[in-house]
Image (spheres, rainbow, N blue to C red):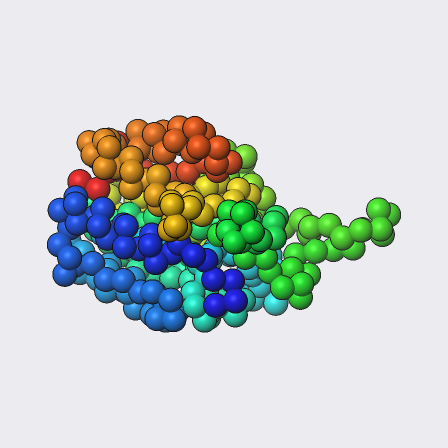
Length: 299
Protein backbone atom coordinates (compact mmCIF):
# COMPACT_ATOMS: atom_id res chain seq x y z
CA UNK A 1 0.00 0.00 0.00
CA UNK A 2 2.83 2.44 0.78
CA UNK A 3 4.23 2.00 -2.74
CA UNK A 4 0.91 1.95 -4.54
CA UNK A 5 0.87 2.38 -8.31
CA UNK A 6 -1.88 4.21 -10.16
CA UNK A 7 -2.51 2.13 -13.28
CA UNK A 8 -2.83 -1.48 -12.11
CA UNK A 9 -6.62 -1.65 -11.78
CA UNK A 10 -7.00 -0.01 -15.19
CA UNK A 11 -4.55 -2.58 -16.61
CA UNK A 12 -6.59 -5.47 -15.22
CA UNK A 13 -9.82 -4.22 -16.78
CA UNK A 14 -8.07 -3.46 -20.08
CA UNK A 15 -6.68 -7.00 -20.31
CA UNK A 16 -10.07 -8.49 -19.37
CA UNK A 17 -11.65 -6.51 -22.20
CA UNK A 18 -8.91 -7.58 -24.62
CA UNK A 19 -9.38 -11.26 -23.71
CA UNK A 20 -13.14 -11.06 -24.16
CA UNK A 21 -12.62 -9.43 -27.56
CA UNK A 22 -10.49 -12.48 -28.40
CA UNK A 23 -13.25 -14.91 -27.48
CA UNK A 24 -12.65 -15.61 -23.79
CA UNK A 25 -15.89 -15.93 -21.82
CA UNK A 26 -16.33 -13.42 -18.96
CA UNK A 27 -17.27 -16.18 -16.49
CA UNK A 28 -13.85 -17.74 -17.11
CA UNK A 29 -11.95 -14.60 -16.10
CA UNK A 30 -11.18 -13.95 -12.43
CA UNK A 31 -9.62 -10.83 -10.99
CA UNK A 32 -7.86 -9.88 -7.75
CA UNK A 33 -7.48 -6.16 -7.01
CA UNK A 34 -5.81 -4.15 -4.25
CA UNK A 35 -6.19 -5.63 -0.74
CA UNK A 36 -7.63 -8.89 -2.13
CA UNK A 37 -4.45 -9.52 -4.14
CA UNK A 38 -2.60 -11.20 -1.27
CA UNK A 39 0.10 -13.82 -1.76
CA UNK A 40 -2.27 -16.60 -0.77
CA UNK A 41 -5.04 -15.17 -2.94
CA UNK A 42 -2.77 -15.11 -6.00
CA UNK A 43 -1.60 -18.69 -5.35
CA UNK A 44 -5.21 -19.86 -5.05
CA UNK A 45 -6.14 -18.18 -8.34
CA UNK A 46 -3.13 -19.76 -10.03
CA UNK A 47 -4.24 -23.16 -8.79
CA UNK A 48 -7.77 -22.53 -10.07
CA UNK A 49 -6.37 -21.41 -13.42
CA UNK A 50 -4.09 -24.37 -14.04
CA UNK A 51 -5.90 -27.30 -12.44
CA UNK A 52 -7.64 -29.61 -14.88
CA UNK A 53 -6.07 -28.15 -18.02
CA UNK A 54 -6.56 -30.30 -21.11
CA UNK A 55 -4.43 -30.46 -24.25
CA UNK A 56 -4.75 -27.32 -26.31
CA UNK A 57 -6.70 -25.35 -23.72
CA UNK A 58 -5.61 -21.73 -23.29
CA UNK A 59 -4.66 -20.44 -19.83
CA UNK A 60 -3.71 -16.78 -19.30
CA UNK A 61 -2.22 -15.23 -16.17
CA UNK A 62 -1.73 -11.45 -16.12
CA UNK A 63 0.00 -9.47 -13.37
CA UNK A 64 0.27 -5.70 -13.11
CA UNK A 65 2.15 -4.23 -10.17
CA UNK A 66 5.53 -4.10 -8.52
CA UNK A 67 8.21 -6.72 -8.96
CA UNK A 68 11.23 -7.26 -6.75
CA UNK A 69 14.33 -9.37 -6.22
CA UNK A 70 15.03 -11.11 -2.92
CA UNK A 71 18.30 -12.73 -1.82
CA UNK A 72 17.70 -16.42 -1.19
CA UNK A 73 19.32 -18.78 1.30
CA UNK A 74 20.40 -22.38 0.74
CA UNK A 75 20.01 -25.23 3.25
CA UNK A 76 23.14 -24.00 5.06
CA UNK A 77 21.58 -20.55 5.56
CA UNK A 78 24.01 -18.98 3.11
CA UNK A 79 22.83 -16.53 0.44
CA UNK A 80 23.53 -18.32 -2.83
CA UNK A 81 20.90 -17.02 -5.28
CA UNK A 82 18.30 -14.35 -6.02
CA UNK A 83 14.56 -14.94 -6.37
CA UNK A 84 12.53 -12.79 -8.73
CA UNK A 85 9.09 -12.25 -7.26
CA UNK A 86 5.74 -10.58 -7.69
CA UNK A 87 4.76 -8.16 -4.92
CA UNK A 88 1.31 -8.94 -3.44
CA UNK A 89 -0.64 -6.53 -1.24
CA UNK A 90 0.72 -8.15 1.96
CA UNK A 91 4.34 -8.36 0.75
CA UNK A 92 6.91 -8.19 3.58
CA UNK A 93 10.20 -9.23 1.90
CA UNK A 94 9.75 -12.88 2.88
CA UNK A 95 9.31 -15.91 0.63
CA UNK A 96 5.96 -16.64 2.26
CA UNK A 97 4.60 -13.20 1.39
CA UNK A 98 5.96 -13.20 -2.18
CA UNK A 99 4.99 -15.07 -5.34
CA UNK A 100 8.13 -16.70 -6.74
CA UNK A 101 9.04 -19.15 -9.50
CA UNK A 102 8.36 -22.14 -7.23
CA UNK A 103 4.70 -21.11 -6.97
CA UNK A 104 4.36 -21.22 -10.76
CA UNK A 105 6.42 -24.32 -11.39
CA UNK A 106 4.67 -26.47 -8.77
CA UNK A 107 1.47 -25.97 -10.79
CA UNK A 108 2.48 -25.77 -14.45
CA UNK A 109 5.03 -28.59 -14.30
CA UNK A 110 2.13 -31.06 -14.38
CA UNK A 111 0.40 -29.54 -17.41
CA UNK A 112 -0.02 -31.66 -20.56
CA UNK A 113 2.81 -30.96 -22.99
CA UNK A 114 0.43 -29.41 -25.53
CA UNK A 115 -1.41 -27.20 -23.01
CA UNK A 116 -1.22 -23.46 -23.63
CA UNK A 117 -0.23 -21.34 -20.65
CA UNK A 118 0.61 -17.66 -21.10
CA UNK A 119 1.95 -15.47 -18.28
CA UNK A 120 2.22 -11.70 -18.83
CA UNK A 121 4.04 -9.54 -16.29
CA UNK A 122 3.76 -5.74 -16.37
CA UNK A 123 6.38 -5.17 -13.69
CA UNK A 124 10.13 -5.00 -13.32
CA UNK A 125 12.67 -6.30 -10.83
CA UNK A 126 15.14 -3.40 -10.91
CA UNK A 127 13.71 -1.29 -8.10
CA UNK A 128 17.13 -0.66 -6.59
CA UNK A 129 18.13 1.42 -9.60
CA UNK A 130 15.77 4.34 -9.08
CA UNK A 131 13.61 6.24 -6.65
CA UNK A 132 9.90 6.42 -7.36
CA UNK A 133 8.95 10.08 -7.71
CA UNK A 134 5.45 9.36 -9.00
CA UNK A 135 3.29 10.80 -11.73
CA UNK A 136 2.10 13.68 -9.60
CA UNK A 137 5.59 15.14 -9.86
CA UNK A 138 5.56 14.73 -13.62
CA UNK A 139 7.77 11.64 -13.58
CA UNK A 140 6.45 8.22 -14.68
CA UNK A 141 6.18 5.65 -11.91
CA UNK A 142 8.48 2.63 -12.12
CA UNK A 143 7.14 -0.82 -11.30
CA UNK A 144 9.94 -2.20 -9.14
CA UNK A 145 10.61 -1.98 -5.40
CA UNK A 146 13.87 -1.01 -3.71
CA UNK A 147 14.73 -3.51 -0.95
CA UNK A 148 15.07 -2.27 2.63
CA UNK A 149 18.71 -1.77 3.56
CA UNK A 150 18.86 -4.87 5.79
CA UNK A 151 17.59 -7.03 2.91
CA UNK A 152 19.93 -5.33 0.45
CA UNK A 153 22.87 -5.98 2.80
CA UNK A 154 22.51 -9.73 2.18
CA UNK A 155 23.81 -9.22 -1.36
CA UNK A 156 26.65 -6.84 -0.46
CA UNK A 157 30.24 -7.14 0.70
CA UNK A 158 32.73 -4.55 1.92
CA UNK A 159 35.63 -3.72 -0.40
CA UNK A 160 38.36 -2.58 1.97
CA UNK A 161 40.72 -1.56 -0.82
CA UNK A 162 38.16 0.67 -2.55
CA UNK A 163 36.44 1.60 0.74
CA UNK A 164 32.97 0.95 -0.66
CA UNK A 165 30.20 -1.65 -0.74
CA UNK A 166 29.99 -3.96 -3.76
CA UNK A 167 27.75 -6.83 -4.83
CA UNK A 168 28.69 -10.32 -3.74
CA UNK A 169 29.60 -12.78 -6.46
CA UNK A 170 27.18 -15.72 -6.52
CA UNK A 171 27.88 -19.03 -8.23
CA UNK A 172 25.71 -19.96 -11.23
CA UNK A 173 22.64 -21.89 -10.13
CA UNK A 174 23.42 -24.49 -12.81
CA UNK A 175 26.68 -25.38 -14.54
CA UNK A 176 24.64 -25.84 -17.71
CA UNK A 177 23.26 -22.28 -17.59
CA UNK A 178 26.30 -20.08 -17.10
CA UNK A 179 26.77 -18.43 -20.50
CA UNK A 180 25.71 -14.90 -21.35
CA UNK A 181 23.21 -16.38 -23.81
CA UNK A 182 21.45 -18.07 -20.87
CA UNK A 183 20.55 -14.72 -19.26
CA UNK A 184 16.82 -15.03 -20.14
CA UNK A 185 16.72 -18.15 -17.97
CA UNK A 186 19.05 -17.35 -15.05
CA UNK A 187 19.77 -13.61 -15.27
CA UNK A 188 22.93 -11.81 -16.28
CA UNK A 189 24.63 -12.99 -13.08
CA UNK A 190 23.47 -16.59 -13.75
CA UNK A 191 22.28 -16.82 -10.12
CA UNK A 192 18.64 -15.70 -10.36
CA UNK A 193 15.57 -17.93 -10.21
CA UNK A 194 13.52 -16.01 -12.75
CA UNK A 195 9.74 -16.15 -12.78
CA UNK A 196 8.17 -18.91 -14.83
CA UNK A 197 11.39 -20.68 -15.84
CA UNK A 198 11.33 -23.62 -13.40
CA UNK A 199 15.10 -23.54 -13.02
CA UNK A 200 15.21 -25.50 -9.75
CA UNK A 201 14.35 -28.62 -11.73
CA UNK A 202 15.51 -27.61 -15.19
CA UNK A 203 19.00 -26.73 -13.99
CA UNK A 204 19.43 -30.03 -12.13
CA UNK A 205 18.85 -32.28 -15.15
CA UNK A 206 21.59 -33.51 -17.43
CA UNK A 207 21.42 -32.42 -21.04
CA UNK A 208 20.78 -36.04 -22.11
CA UNK A 209 17.85 -36.35 -19.70
CA UNK A 210 16.41 -33.06 -20.86
CA UNK A 211 16.59 -34.09 -24.52
CA UNK A 212 15.00 -37.47 -23.74
CA UNK A 213 12.08 -35.83 -21.94
CA UNK A 214 11.57 -33.37 -24.76
CA UNK A 215 11.59 -36.14 -27.37
CA UNK A 216 8.96 -38.00 -25.35
CA UNK A 217 6.95 -34.78 -24.89
CA UNK A 218 7.14 -35.16 -21.13
CA UNK A 219 8.08 -32.73 -18.40
CA UNK A 220 10.05 -29.53 -18.68
CA UNK A 221 6.94 -27.63 -19.71
CA UNK A 222 7.76 -23.99 -20.40
CA UNK A 223 4.92 -21.47 -20.63
CA UNK A 224 4.94 -18.48 -22.96
CA UNK A 225 6.27 -15.60 -20.87
CA UNK A 226 5.72 -12.02 -22.05
CA UNK A 227 7.41 -9.47 -19.81
CA UNK A 228 7.32 -5.68 -19.82
CA UNK A 229 11.09 -5.21 -19.88
CA UNK A 230 14.47 -6.86 -19.71
CA UNK A 231 16.53 -7.56 -16.63
CA UNK A 232 17.84 -4.31 -15.17
CA UNK A 233 15.31 -2.22 -17.12
CA UNK A 234 12.38 -0.32 -15.66
CA UNK A 235 8.70 -0.90 -16.45
CA UNK A 236 7.01 2.48 -16.66
CA UNK A 237 3.47 3.71 -16.24
CA UNK A 238 1.75 5.62 -19.04
CA UNK A 239 -0.63 8.55 -18.58
CA UNK A 240 -3.55 8.39 -21.04
CA UNK A 241 -5.30 11.71 -20.55
CA UNK A 242 -6.38 11.61 -16.90
CA UNK A 243 -5.96 7.82 -16.56
CA UNK A 244 -2.88 5.73 -15.80
CA UNK A 245 -1.90 2.40 -17.34
CA UNK A 246 1.22 0.30 -17.54
CA UNK A 247 3.10 1.31 -20.68
CA UNK A 248 3.48 -2.36 -21.58
CA UNK A 249 -0.18 -3.24 -21.03
CA UNK A 250 -1.47 -0.24 -22.96
CA UNK A 251 0.91 -0.77 -25.88
CA UNK A 252 0.24 -4.52 -25.99
CA UNK A 253 -3.55 -4.11 -26.04
CA UNK A 254 -3.33 -1.45 -28.74
CA UNK A 255 -1.11 -3.69 -30.89
CA UNK A 256 -3.40 -6.73 -30.50
CA UNK A 257 -6.45 -4.67 -31.47
CA UNK A 258 -4.65 -3.10 -34.42
CA UNK A 259 -3.26 -6.36 -35.81
CA UNK A 260 -5.14 -9.31 -34.29
CA UNK A 261 -3.49 -12.02 -36.41
CA UNK A 262 0.11 -11.51 -35.26
CA UNK A 263 2.18 -14.35 -33.80
CA UNK A 264 3.80 -13.84 -30.41
CA UNK A 265 7.18 -13.28 -32.08
CA UNK A 266 5.82 -10.58 -34.39
CA UNK A 267 3.78 -9.03 -31.58
CA UNK A 268 6.92 -8.62 -29.51
CA UNK A 269 8.60 -6.80 -32.40
CA UNK A 270 5.59 -4.51 -32.84
CA UNK A 271 5.47 -3.63 -29.13
CA UNK A 272 9.23 -2.99 -29.14
CA UNK A 273 8.90 -0.66 -32.12
CA UNK A 274 6.01 1.20 -30.45
CA UNK A 275 8.11 1.63 -27.30
CA UNK A 276 10.93 3.14 -29.35
CA UNK A 277 8.57 5.58 -31.08
CA UNK A 278 7.15 6.70 -27.73
CA UNK A 279 10.54 7.04 -26.08
CA UNK A 280 10.29 4.23 -23.52
CA UNK A 281 13.64 2.79 -22.50
CA UNK A 282 12.30 -0.71 -22.00
CA UNK A 283 12.24 -3.72 -24.29
CA UNK A 284 9.60 -6.42 -23.87
CA UNK A 285 10.96 -9.92 -23.30
CA UNK A 286 9.39 -13.03 -24.82
CA UNK A 287 10.40 -16.49 -23.58
CA UNK A 288 9.02 -19.87 -24.63
CA UNK A 289 9.44 -22.90 -26.84
CA UNK A 290 9.79 -22.07 -30.54
CA UNK A 291 6.51 -23.63 -31.73
CA UNK A 292 4.18 -21.74 -29.33
CA UNK A 293 5.93 -18.45 -30.10
CA UNK A 294 5.05 -18.85 -33.77
CA UNK A 295 1.34 -19.30 -33.01
CA UNK A 296 -1.15 -16.48 -33.33
CA UNK A 297 -1.25 -14.53 -30.07
CA UNK A 298 -4.30 -15.20 -27.86
CA UNK A 299 -5.87 -17.45 -30.48
